[in-house]
Image 1 (cartoon, rainbow, N blue to C red):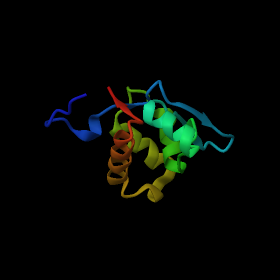
Image 2: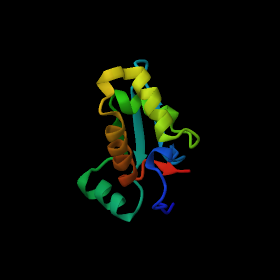
Image 3: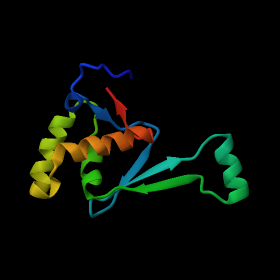
Image 4: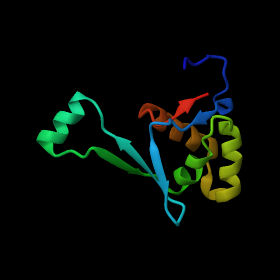
Length: 113
């Protein structure tokens, strides 16, 4: 999706890609399961013993946010939920959320609706 320069970042609606499976343990911690596909990954798997699936363990805040990424909830609304859940420990809230979503976006772990 192309970014509109006039768009407010906090009004963006992140969503989980269907291609990423994930699990949530009994403590609420989320682990993403990323399948390593493609020619280069196959070569790395065969010759360098790299795994077919990479597991990414999210921290407490990321584990709280991941199930909420439905493509309907804005970053602003997610921030309100994070502040309710974590209070002052989440500060500086929106700077941290912006960085978090930039990182997810750079790895292709989030889509925008």
